[in-house]
Length: 233
Ligand code: ADP
Ligand code: MG
Image (cartoon, rainbow, N blue to C red; front, side, top):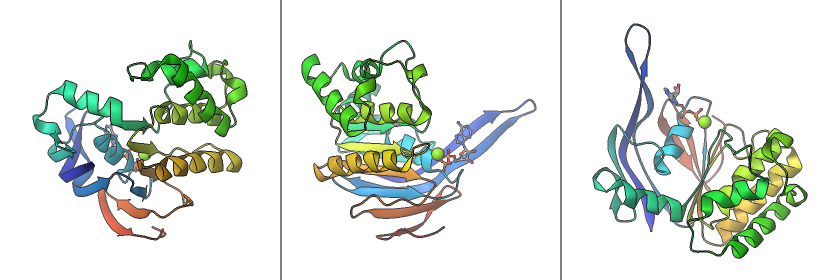
């Protein structure tokens, strides 16, 4: 199963007081992500990394071009079919942290995954396993406002991984983390990768993902470098 982007362009329309402004997020980008691939997308802020991940994850729709999940063409498929695919196969870690302040850490992780064909018991034990690896098990019954930014980031990571997704899209998953926590998150991602998940990780800083990966560097909405080694941009 693969995810294909075929000549995808995303243009944001922003209303200003006088007129409409069009901002290019990404330009005519074609890229295939295969199950089991590890892609690291880097580049300066504003280069289009988050736009690219949101398009791949089905959170944004392209302005032009086509996205194909396995055999589902996004432009011509019903929304429920697309949602279903996303729910089951895609674990998305967004750049912005969004957690429910009235739910505990464990509830925040489990609630969005309630549709999975898994018992609550197995979801709970999966959640605990992941929290332990992230050094956060002792806070499973805490509430997000009681956590640091880095700890909240880890909850976002756990929430995306607990479904054991076929694809993981991680947008700046290690920002705000101390070195030990960074290693814990990257080790966990590597573990999922070793178990077959495809990963696309966006980062604005140089990182070592600890395994073989393909590297893309973005600039102005385009991929201007790809290779098997990380490079400065
Ligand atoms: P990165 O993740 O590499 O920092 P983004 O994908 O967030 O880059 O942004 C790429 C470009 O798209 C930027 O020029 C940014 O201003 C624009 N952009 C991103 N999100 C929006 C939005 N919601 N509305 C308007 N413009 C946006
Ligand atoms: Mg970004």
